[in-house]
Length: 546
Figure (cartoon, rainbow, N blue to C red):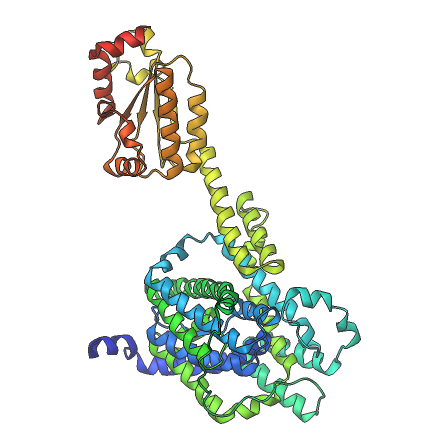
């Protein structure tokens, strides 16, 4: 790493990055506190996470101008972990550190490229589900009651809202919501609405001495570094699934933000380097008791609009939060929890993908089914299961859609008039027993259905010509379908010839032991060569006459 690289990466726009980092840090403060409380780990965990991950993810990441901090999806997962079996804080932070290590592993094996293959319906259903979860679990704290951390607990104890409704807390919560939506019309988004809501609601609640729940005291000074230890293998078995969920969702969340940044800045992010940076950031966060973090879209956009364009702006954003922690941490104890709940509800509303919801009546049925499935699973089952099921379902529906198109063609040679001139030397009764199958795309599991259906309709034939001109790849399903067809035709005494099989296709067939089942004299480069072979091989002609 030389000086020119450091200057290009961190100091290409120092004034703009300074302004962007400071502005984003101010915007991030109320969000960090709110996410910390929502997670069940306390406001300080959100502040620690935004500070540590913000600095280190920017320092080692791969998306210029991106700001990292606690986000909705990550907070929802942590809240679920806290509310379930991981009650030991040491195990929770060990989970966060392990998630960071997994993200670094994802970056090393170049898994970041896979983000481009996640279908839009999956992302849409997932984001809408996350938005709904945030809104629902903040209903209790909005009216002055303890949060239950998950959807199930919120619904089970929903009647508590009627019994324990705190009018003062509800007033502050709705005031926060009102201010977040009102401020942009007054100040044209020059002042961060969540920060205004945080200050105004805190001041009002203190002046009028409201008896409402507030943030517990945030420690003053540098956070302590703690190295969580796993006492035995069962503990590792306990935390690994949760760490994997955090790693995958954090990677997905960050890379989606990276794609948004690419569209806005015109630059191209480095997916794998971004995962490594996010992993290092989450390790740092876990070591000081902070929330796991990811690339935050809203804060990143604020940074760009405020002048931040390089990695330095994200670092400055984290350093500002550290400065606030060192000097103003004690003041945070006056912030009402209902104010943070109101701010989070506006975040949940903004996360919902309204474009996807509006397209339900117009989008293809398969995409709608995938989106609704992911939405329901996200809210009521599990975020990881929702993503896995959504991607699998979307892939299967897309494969079905492709296979239903039936791009491949098949017919008897005698019925193809444009080939009569080439095959005119073959008697008509012989041409009727020659069948041609043309693949016009990949031979994959979706095309196997059409291939097998066509083969079942081939009656009274003695020669099958399969054209591979337009086959770029063949998967395992296609290879085995081809092998089964060869074995069946050999039993029936049908000669099979192949045209235009590329080296890649032959290599794929060879790897699974199918290529050696195809005689060398059955592979041809052109259709004319096959016809010449049929015309001049007496054994073939004699066979066709039978």
